[in-house]
Length: 116
Image (cartoon, rainbow, N blue to C red):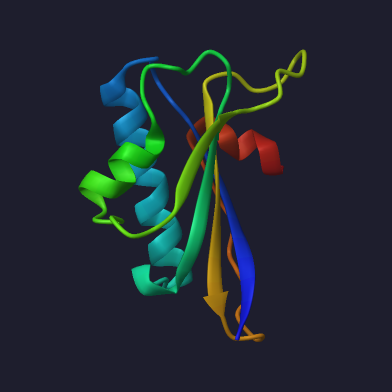
């Protein structure tokens, strides 16, 4: 068994706990569905948010709404590069998997522009 990372990103409508929570849940559910991931296979998760998003922690919604109570998670601010996408939540989910597993990255809403 090896570990592989699954990347994803989504734009958040507003800098509010409700918007951050809704975007987090939407992104995580889509990643899990597209990659057929079981919670027990998740090694750890790293969230980043652009500097204009600071109303709440995305990991909170994974723990509460997704039941990821035993998954190690950290939240950080993304590097503030001039001209970069605003109000963006990014995630890296590291999973324990077989060598043949091919992760499908997920970019939703305005974050689709990150992977043209």
